[in-house]
Length: 157
Image (cartoon, rainbow, N blue to C red; front, side, top):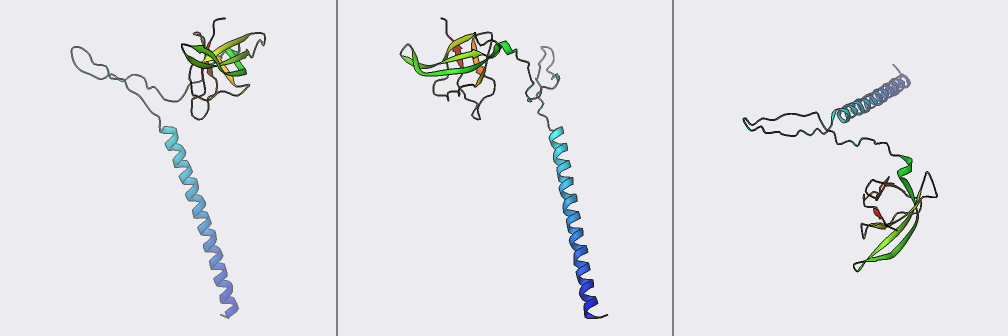
């Protein structure tokens, strides 16, 4: 066997080894991804509520309650966008509050004035969407990263 043939044999061996290493790495990555996906799919936080009977202590397992948020449909008539934020407007018992003007997204002729109830929390930007609940509280539809965007209570005018 000549030197040239030996070199070609060594090069062919190295190429085969490199292909084998790449195949092993790809297989390992796919396997890890599948295992991670399976773990995430089966990893659910279940909450069990203990119930103690008067005669005999026991635990009753109720249907699992998962921590994942369920989507609740919101009526468009309850959605308002921020039209204006006025700093330090309302003075109640010596306290100064921000006041927001909110415009209904379904009927822009419906306008609400509301005062902030979370002093020191960040003010929303113009156009931020808020949901009006049955008690007159305006809460952000989508909150900020700190989950501390100001909430507002509708003013009686």
